[in-house]
Length: 287
Image (cartoon, rainbow, N blue to C red; front, side):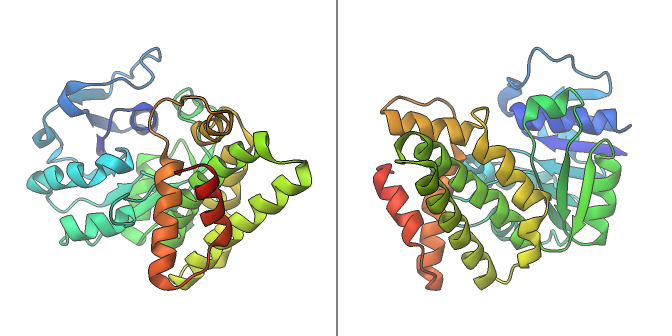
């Protein structure tokens, strides 16, 4: 299959390489020709790089892997070359200004796209790119999931139809991982850290249920699996950023957990869902 991948950071690069290793031909788009993700890992021969979106017009399946902060801008540009492909959203996050999830942004910018889904799970990009075993939840309709299994056959994929729940898992784990890193430094003991961590995740689940998500989704790879990986490891950007904030140090790069925490609170306020721990942690971190 011919696959188009939008986004050339570490995660976009890892997924482009994974699609190639799964036996597909990949056209990998990077903004202004910048491909700065995992530059030390050799590019497969069946990955072609481009800065021209029109090169992806005839691909049979698309993956969007841009940071949440640039998702809407990228999708607006994609609309001009969209020709009915199923679209798999591989971005975990919420839009800071609106509190919208990525599927909501896609729906507003390309409303004619009815075959879209979400990929989310416990993965560090470098490990994925080098072929270390991992898996993801793939949520969407039959066409999206069938294409995803071909595009990413090198991964273990857990099927779901819970698109909104899968997204909330990804957003929630970003926020809770940030909180977990912060508490690693500031909590007076492991008990206090576990208490705040659990209550924060419980508030994420409350919001998800209010939005119609399936609680079972939170026990899958996109939920418990991703939370375990990101909220316990210093390798996680969100976890390490939380530690840096607690120590009054600077952190580098895009920290999705900051936008996720703000967005979750904003969405909860709109829906009347109480999130006292998320609010308290946001205030303590001065975000």
